[in-house]
Structure formats: C-alpha cells, structure tokens
Amino acid sequence: MEEPYYLANFKHVLNAVWRRGSGWWRDHEIALVDRFTKLSPEYQAPYVKWIQRKGVAFLCEKKHLVPALIRQRLNKEGLISQVVTAKNASDVLRHLPISDLRRWLQMPGARKEEIVAAMEENWTTLQPHIEECSWVVVQGKDLFRRLFCLYFGNAAQDLSEFVKVHLGRLNYPSYSLSAGSKFKSRAGLDAYVNWFQLSTELRADIDVEQAELIIQEANHQFESDRPFTKPLLWCWLFALKSLEKQVGDAKAIDLYVACFGRSSSVKALERLTLLQERLGLLSDAYKNLSDSKDIFARRGEQLRFLERMKRVERKLGLNINRRFGVRTPQDQSISADKASERAAVKAEFIWNDEALHIEPWVLNYYRAKGYAGVIAENAYIQSLVGFLAWDVIYADCEGAFYHAYQSGPNDLGTPGFCQRRHAIWTHWTASIINMTREQRITYFCRTLAKHAHENSRLTRFADATNEVFLCWINHLDGSQLIRLVGQVLDEYQSLRSGFPDLVVWNEQEFMVIEVKGPGDRVQEPQRIWHDFLLELGVNVQIVRVRAK
Image 1 (cartoon, helix red, strand yellow):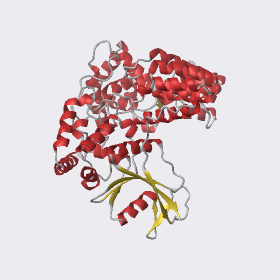
Image 2: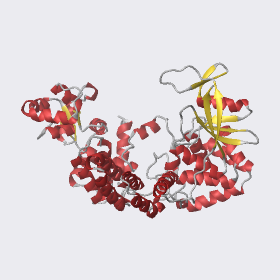
Image 3: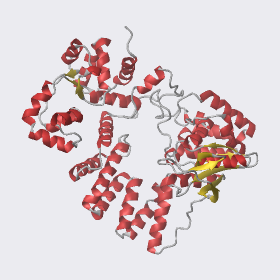
C-alpha cells in the first residue's frame, strides 16, 4: 500500500531534522517518535492528520472517525488519549473547543472569561459530561510544531507547500541549501515557538497583570541575536500599548524607555517620543531622536524620523533641521464625468459611455495621448527587480535557504542583503554596466522566460510579459537599474507596498503615475516610493481626478 502524500511529507520533515545532538530532544520526545516510527502506515496516517489540526483535542465526529481498533492502538502507544481529564475550568478551556462548551452551558456567543466562570460554578455537573464524550486528545503536538519550525525556519509555514508541489501547482526556484537551521539551540527554538504562539493568541483586551507578565518575561529573555526576537518584540510592544491607557502616559514612558534601552526598537522609540510630545516633554523627545537617528536604517523609518524631528523642532522654536528633504512629485488635475454613485463601490468615471474605476480611466486618458501603459502597483515593480536580479536573489549565501520550499531568501529586505552576496553582486553590477541596452533587454527576456513559472516571492505580477517591463530598461541606464535593484532588495520591507498605480511610456517619455480620486490622500508607503523614484531620476506624477 502506497503511503498517503501527507504521511510521506511528514516523514520527510521528521527524517530531515530529527538526527541532531542529544541536547535537542527530551527523553519523552525520543520515546514518542520511536513509538511512531515503529507503527505501520495504517496507524501513522490518522495520527499525522490529527497532528496537523489546530486544536489539541476534538470530538471524534464522523469527519475525523477512524476504526476503533486504530484508535485503541494509538491510545495504547501513548500517541493519543481518548478521555479528557481536567483539574479545573481553565484546564478544560486549553484543550477543548469553546464552541462545544458554549453549547453545553447554553451560552451562545459567551466570552472566554464568562465560560470559565460558568464552568467553575457548575464544575461538579459538567466534569462527568466532558469525560464521557468520545474525544481524541493528541499527544506530541508541541514536539512536532518544533520539528516544522526547525525544517521551515518559522511557525507560519506548514506541509501544504509539499501538497501544492505534489499536485503540480507550484514549482520552486533552485538554490543551494545552508547546513542546519536558523535555530542554533533548543532554548532558542522553544522560545520562538512560545512567543509565536503567544503572538497569535493576544487580543486587545488583555489585562494589566498579563501585560506586566509579558513585559517582565520579554525584558528577561531579550537577546538581539536570537531568532525569536521578532515575535518576542511584537508581544512586548503589544503589551506596552495595552498598558498605556491603564497606567497613564508618564508610567508608559518609563516602560518604553526600558524597552528601547534593551531592544533599540525603532517602534519603541517612535511611541516613546510621541508620548513625550503629548506630555510636553519636547526636550526629552528631541534628545532621544537626535541621539538615535542612526538606528533609522530604512526609508520608511527615516521619513517618520524626519517628520517627527521637524515637528519637535518647530514646537521648540528651532530651525536647524534643514539638511533633510523629502522629494514630492508634481501634481496635475484632470476633470471627468463621474458615474452615478453605487454603494460599497470605488469611485467610477465615464470613459466612452463606460463607467471605469479611476486607475483604468487615467490609463485610457494617457493611451489617448499616444502612451502605452500598465496598471502596476507593488507586484509589478517587485517582478521587474526579481527577474532582473534573479541570479543575485537566489545566489548561494549562508543562512538564506534552509529547505526546498522557500519563495525567497530568509534575509530579503534586511540591510546589507546585496553586500552579503558580494561576489555575485559585484559580478552582476559589472555585467549590467558593461551591457548595451539591447543586451540588457535580451538578458531580461531570457530570465523571464526561464523563471516565470516558478514560485518566487518577487515575481508574482499576473501579466508578466516582456512589453510591460522593458520601458524601464529602455529609459534607465545601467547605474539607475542597479540602484533600483539594490534599494528594493535591501529595503524590501519598506518598499513592499506603496508603488504608484500606473507606468506609462512612449518612445520619448517614461512616467510613473500615482492616481488619486476625490478625497484621496498620499499615504506614507507611497511617499517613500515617490521620494526614491525621484531620487533615481524617474519622472513621477500625481494625477488627481476631479468630478466635473
């Protein structure tokens, strides 16, 4: 009997990461995996299905039903249990679906706290009813969550990637794998899983006690070189934000000072200076910004720093921050006949008796003037960079790729991305500079034809044809293309959104256009792109469409 694909995938992950040093695994985990591997596929398959469910326990309803003999064998091996034992109401809630508890207690829509209170009040009556149901309680779920993290390098990805490839729906790029994993110790792996899980469970209504516990634990565990820093810092900042209204701005400032001093988090500093402004502590805000300006590495952070610095300087009566400047595009207005209003529909304007959304309307406006064009936005510019610099993005680099199901390198968008690939980056930039325009076009078209079918994070523009991209190669020289690529790869996080709506061109002219309708404003990610494109020497226009 051939193994189901999901079982084969699971075993692939298990075999890939299980054989590590003795310090990685606990005795009970080794025993559990040993019992699993000795079972036949008939018993392994339902266990793997249950492992991949969200809950730890669930009712063995029809859709989850497997023969009683299989359940009994898995129960005997300690891979599942079929009776829920709970010491108190909170223990039950950690394992059982809240929807079932609401039904039993006849409390539709009740919140978690209300459920716990009701169960504690009726615990004697409720406990036998819980234990007599046909439950499947999966053992080892935390262990296998850690195995997936070790394989994929994060807790968000799962075995669905294998399925998509198995069905022929995805084809991943080719690249060299780094040895090991981004997790260097069991402690780091456990911390990442725990903080990631907490980040998925936090809600806006956490109480003061829980927020203070999170802050205390985060401050204790924080180490900037650990892979669990990102989810930890997210939880830390979430807890701080939750405490602000409850402890007051003055106390919140002290908490943000401690967070920033420990983590050098840009977001912590931004929130700290905002609170200082609110309380009139302008000198403190100015000093914090002045002393920390070097940590604002990304364009978005630099833009926010500039605006806050100017605001604080203005309130202090200073006028010394003139060395900074944000470039802004030229504005032009176009009048158009507005279509009749329809509820929950974007503004529409009439073009040749047809009601069009604002972007296609402006595109038709320029086509009537003899321009070719494309509705662009973010996937468009990312695809241009992705195909143009494919060899750089998927170059051999330590720590960039740990498994065969990555749509992009782990360090994409981090400062120094290109310099960590110094050899291939230097070779690529020299090639782009030395090529003629015709050679660059040939190089780009060949790369697009070769890789358009592959699942790359940077090449997901739906209409990826040579025509819609070549305007950049025709109108920008080699050094401009290199700066464009380098900026997007190094600052992917800042530049992943906000690219203007349209790109239009003819033989003489090439423009990038931000389209704005009535009441629309330019947002921060858009301003970041405008500033960069203008710095690059690209003609950027804001076209505002007004109703006649």
